[in-house]
Amino acid sequence: MIETGMTHTVEKTVTADMTAKADSLLFHAGEHLYIHEFHHWDSTDNGSGFSVWKSEKAQWECGFASMSLYAGFPHLYWAGTPLPRRFVSGAKFYQRQKRNTHD
Image (cartoon, rainbow, N blue to C red):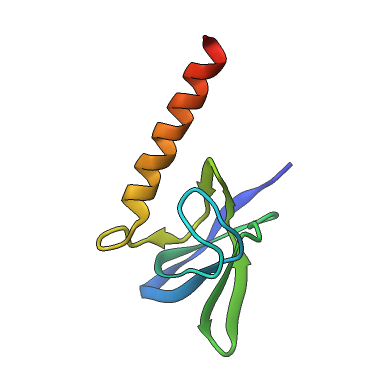
């Protein structure tokens, strides 16, 4: 069983650079995206779909990603990125797949 919980509140917004390890619904392998956190969460399984770099002393892995899923604690900046278009494209693909399995 995976357990999650908030560890503490951040005094200010923390920004970091997140890199996708593989192609997925929203990301291409090796693609960077700036993320932010307003709070710190922890889990017994934080995922390993992304590498995050905040500083030389603060680096970690997090998130889950597939061709139909993005799940993780980092807050993503969607504006001015290809993420919205990729999300809509993924939703349309899912809808076509679902329709084809019911025909």
